[in-house]
Amino acid sequence: MSLNQIFSIAGSSATAQTIRLNAVASNLANAGSAGSTPEEAYQALKPVFTVFQDNPGPAGPLSNASVQVKVSDIQRITATNEQRQYEPDHPNADEDGYVFYPKVNLVSEMADMMSASRSYQTSIEIMTTAKKMQQRLLTLGQ
Image (cartoon, rainbow, N blue to C red; front, side, top):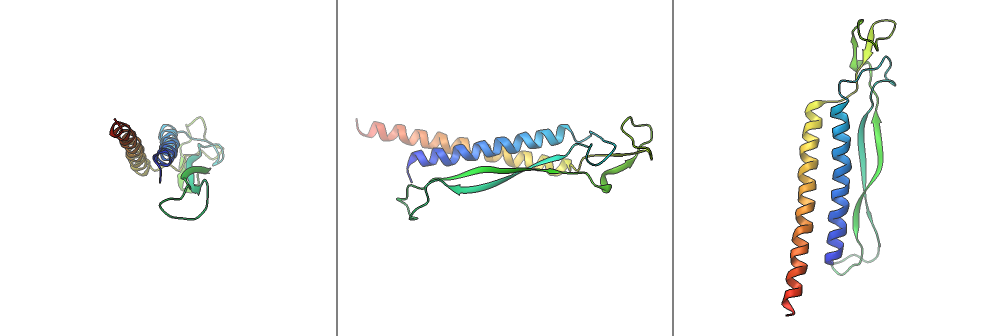
């Protein structure tokens, strides 16, 4: 594995974690947004990631293949009857007085945020370490 592949892998990981953090931030910001139907309520975002190999070929330490993480889809989680609450005075209440809140679990979202933040930080540290290794390699030739 070359140092350039390390930058590619860590960079794609940092990008994926940024998307994950943005989805969590959006979910947390809209956790209290209500609608009169499940479709009108905010739909929580859940990114789906896939791992793919840039240049598939023979596996091994000398392979030119670079593995990357990409966002394959961003799923929208629709509110269900479990998120229905009776609030007849709410401006978004339906004719029966019910409003639908998004299916957002604040504790789960906060845990996701911490996990994504730490993963992002790790990716940046990997790139910093690889950069230092490249700089040391250049000084060996002097």
